[in-house]
Length: 212
Image (cartoon, rainbow, N blue to C red):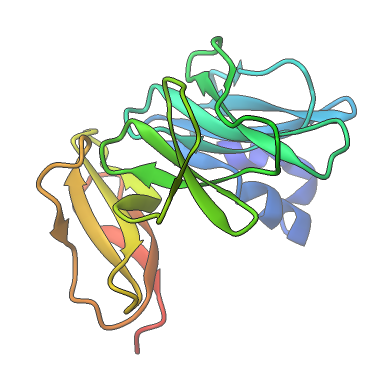
């Protein structure tokens, strides 16, 4: 059985299953996902064949929407506060442990993307963007330029494909080294191209577009 049929056997064809699977993010050989534990949600990873399930969080406080860091070694996620109307962006090691809050806890923060240096996170709050280092530090207001969104790491972990806005003309796809070097456009910008994903063999990239 696949990991998806093992994770969501009750919802294989329902809209709830599709919504849950949007938070199942594949990176290399593992899937990161959130699942209900008691009255809350915690984070897990698992292999695509359904083996090697690993729990990453244990507080059941609404740990959802995991996103792999470009280096594949850490996972950024959203943690709800007790009032369940606001939350913060947190980070945890992919092997588990080292949970840390990245945002200051004074507003509602959501994950927005990755900096091209691969070391900073873009977060959104109240329609404004801020940048914060994954190692910790101040949450600094930014114009959200040179940021990764909808990023996907190549199977050999040497390059990233991502989307970013180009001079207000739309969202274009680029590839770069995992440190942000050697950036180059993937295809000419003629439409909004988003949500790229590498094929398992690294030879092709699928993406969503409104081009004709």
